[in-house]
Amino acid sequence: MIMTSCKQKPATVAVDPAAVKAELATFMDEFNAAYKALDINKMIALCNDNALFLGTDPSEFWNKKQITDLFMAQAGDSTMKIEYKLDRREIIVAPDGKSAIVVEQYFVPFISAKMQVRSISKLVKADDKWMFDFVSWNVIPRNEDIPKLDAALE
Image 1 (cartoon, rainbow, N blue to C red):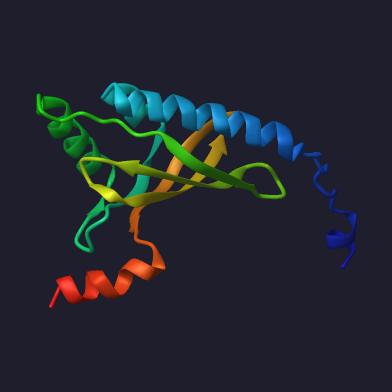
Image 2: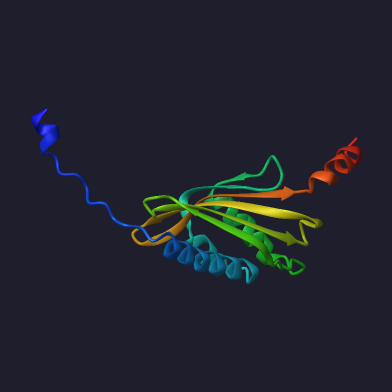
């Protein structure tokens, strides 16, 4: 009991959520620019070694090496044009300022011209550097289009 009561509590560090959101917005802008330019080295440098990446297909579960291979294949495809414009971005910062969830929505023509993609990313901060820990890309049809999609899949 004495040992526990004598322990020093870690100092609480005040986090400015607006400043962290601005920092993360810059980070995401840099990643999106690197992806559009297929700057594989820059993109991969922003990912933890044990990060998990989920694609739009149920079978697409990738580790860092597998997503690197996918990005390399895209970069080697002369017909591949990566173009998209963000329609929405939401950033949720953890109270300690050391992790965050970033949600982005956009149309990616090589995936679908009619359905948006929503990426959901978990970022963690280590050694004053943000890194992707998890990314999930999802095709998000409008609710009113789901019956049409179901009918098309029969």
